[in-house]
Length: 252
Image (cartoon, rainbow, N blue to C red; front, side):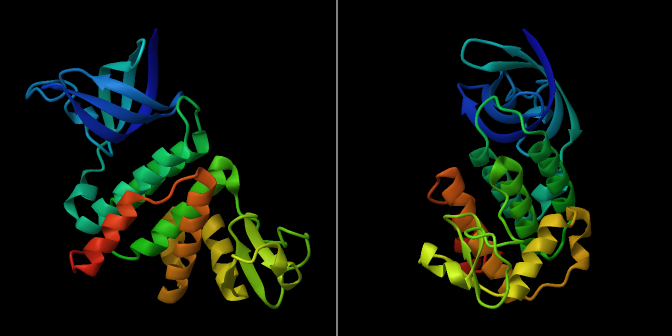
């Protein structure tokens, strides 16, 4: 059966001497494993479309164990992501976040469009990487069905004022009356909450206009990573651990 779909290459693994097995986030069929036979040969027509980060028009044949790529046309290679170490490292994180967040063969149009937009914005980014990343994170977790509740207390539905905390377990902000419902919740304040709301509803194209203190961005990132990992049942993101090790060693 021939399947035509746009797709983004999330991961690649060498198979035998000349081929690759790709993890592709396809627009029609969600996450799939696809064989790019002969993609490592110097003159293969699949060389360009089998590179990580590439956004392609694919023709697939569905086999017993894999999809098989018969043809691919690159719509955007996002090549400039590879030209800068910070873009590259944060790009790997976006791909890992998306790959961990979706199940096989379950399409997610909103998340697909977000990843295309995210890679497009990242390919032109020279600064404010963390602000971009936390804006992507809060949108991504919302698009997989775990939008955090930020307007009312997630526990009692009451108004948010005074002392507040963020409950990873319950999926949103809790008021001071409900602190006892989650003793492991994270302390936040109304200012940080406001920034989270702004990042959720502001397009990735426009986040450069938002001014956020660096310590607030670190706090939001920490909360969101913990929340996402809890929701997708993972222990860590390998790409984030690598980024931290590079930062600690002065690599980026």
